[in-house]
Image (cartoon, rainbow, N blue to C red; front, side, top):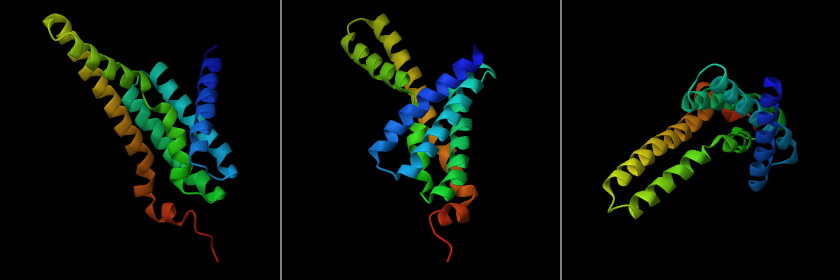
Length: 163
């Protein structure tokens, strides 16, 4: 049952990443790599959160670093920039639920200005969800771009053919 959960998590992330990748019109040879990166990254985050006790931000950092390293490795063979692979692979990991709850709490806070107790609860929920959403997005970006800074020469030369 655990293996089915991990595989289905990765599979759904791969399907979403292919959809996100189609928006930016990468070459067809990039789609299997995008799907693989999304599946591995999302499944890793799922495992870290459910079995290793990591929080969503730290698990997202580890998963996005894995996606970044994978895009460095897989992008060389496809002759596409890393960003062409890792951006669509990262998008399924954006914390949409927390972003939604942030906006919802803000709207409810504004609607309950005359109710102090209710307003405080909505404001607390707003800050909690905004902090989680923002930190996850920052860690996703940092983890995915870190390999570019570590392997600067290789990341630059990925799309250049040797003569």
